[in-house]
Length: 411
Ligand code: PLP
Image (cartoon, rainbow, N blue to C red; front, side):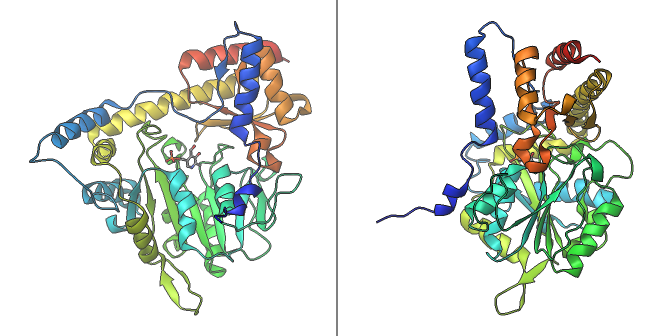
């Protein structure tokens, strides 16, 4: 008889976004005239940069000519894209990352989940709380946890709270952990890490033979000086960190799909016999076996991000969302609501007013303002009392949503 992976049964039934959709749909049905503005899910709204579109159209034409047609590409991605990434995103910032250490993929969501394929099942794993839910759920699926508690915390995971009290940067674990997920700029809090903070993590990882999974999907939103864009800006990170990047939020590729993961060749972890094994070799093997590369057309679109026109268009796109974030921050502050993030990230992390629970604030915003956000508690127990508002929307919608909120909550 066929059996299932029972670990899937441990996953929480009411996943955050379906529950939001359920409440919004019920409200919309009961109030068909309400003009609902969705500032919940972190999907981009603005079209692809022209440089990317032009490159992709040209690539489609190439695919239509037998002389330039492309079949399977390299599983790791085309060298011309890997080289541009290495030069622009890393070497230009003084990071020692070689093109051969970059693996092109169809998303950071899959990469942050798939990376577990090359690690053992007995690692002690630390995540921040709140956290991007994919890190937790993929570990549950892989059987790395026990069941969820009432609070929604899975047995076996180490949760590191990030709240206003610690400036949304987790303290180092007091116990020894083997794998650590860090995300900066952070989803959901919008926080960034200083060089000193990242150095403390790198030093911890090196001292404990741990590996850091560094998710920099929102790197392009960093505006402040002296904030590291890559973990490889920290000395020693090549010996303890894997970095995930994505074109999704940078260049509007959420529907186009292109991302990449950096696995330095200097990075090792222990085999059962105690020997050190290069993680690059394992990831290369994993990708070559289970993945057949990102489409040529999409990689051409991603390559255009690094052209002069592409760079300018991406900058304009990111600035547009950051201006939305600024409006959200300013308007909510004027309504007497405490806000965090939104300066180096497209997310504004709101302290719910009047000590409302995250879901109570969600319901209030939906009912009184017809605005949808994301309850902080959905990202982890320490997110209770917070609320995420996304800057991914049209200016018109952001301004209208803020007008409604400030009218209702004005102090
Ligand atoms: N990492 C973080 C922190 C995210 O918030 C998201 C998407 O929301 C992703 C990764 C997924 O990126 P991709 O579209 O490349 O799969």
